[in-house]
Image (cartoon, rainbow, N blue to C red):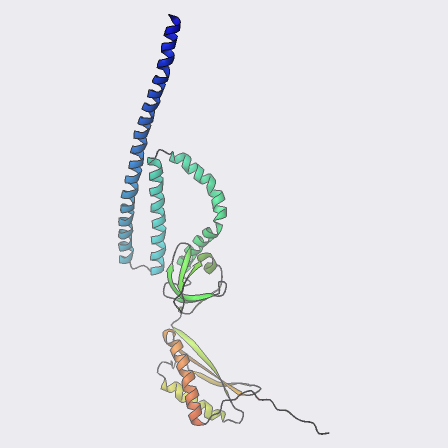
Length: 287
């Protein structure tokens, strides 16, 4: 009798365990499905809310007429912060403890920070650029450290975007720009152009000066104040060098520079003023 009862319990025990296990799995699947669906809804709704906040933020800062460089930096920063908040909300909905996750993230932050120390310095460099404004969007800059030059298109959190004269896009780390020398060609309203013109020995220097003065007077883009300078710079090996310095508005600089080169060449040829070329005199000794 006892053996029969024992056999019946052994047969019933696996059946009860399997049913309980399946029941637990079903309950877990339902709960996990709810969490996953909730996380998906949070993601979809969160992305929609982030887009709306970004649009509203863009409208507000444009109403305040902030500089483009400040605008792009703040938009990039806000987008990163909002996406981090959304990521924490999704993690929390999936049942992961955000406190433990934050602690884990903080402990890993030291190692990540060391690995990303360059990006942190770039972030700090971006803040320095926005505060001290060595350049802004639209300026043409040149940096010897990175050996690049171009027009500033955007100032982002970690990089500044430059467009070169041949329309290439260059991403320069902000840390490089904030900690090295930068030439800003657009900072001032005026720029000084300089030409060094070599004429042949024997030419009348006063005549050369008068010809150049007439060319300067004829070009209305050349400013009268500060006054242009024309002077004999040097007596070189094969030429008498005349230096010409004149001021123009920054936006007219290159047109003035190239046009004056052409005008000097054409006018000197018509006036009979000769341009020198390297010469070598050979003396033959007599026996």
